[in-house]
Length: 105
Image 1 (tube, rainbow, N blue to C red):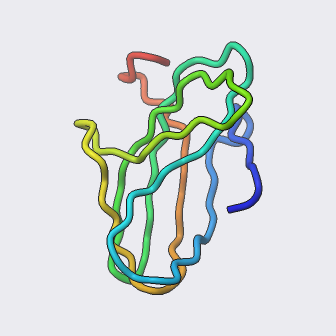
Image 2 (cartoon, rainbow, N blue to C red):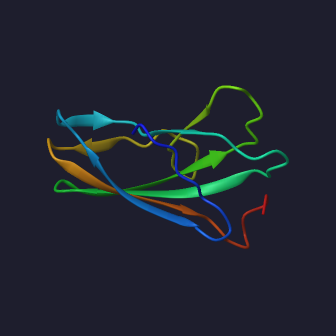
């Protein structure tokens, strides 16, 4: 994607279509900035394609650099999630986790 979006207390969820030009196995990497003084945040990521639904999470750390930071989508145990996509568009949902059990919120 060539545009930056904002997740905030007023917009906790983002839905978008992501084109896939070649089917196969993929890892999703989120590129991001954070405002100064931001806390660690956990995001829930769902990707739906004709091959099925895959879920994962990404941890967003305070990113105080001039270039964007990156976070790969993982399982709850920290393993990289492998997404299997066909050649089509996939629907991606990214949502800020407001789980009370999350130790960083």
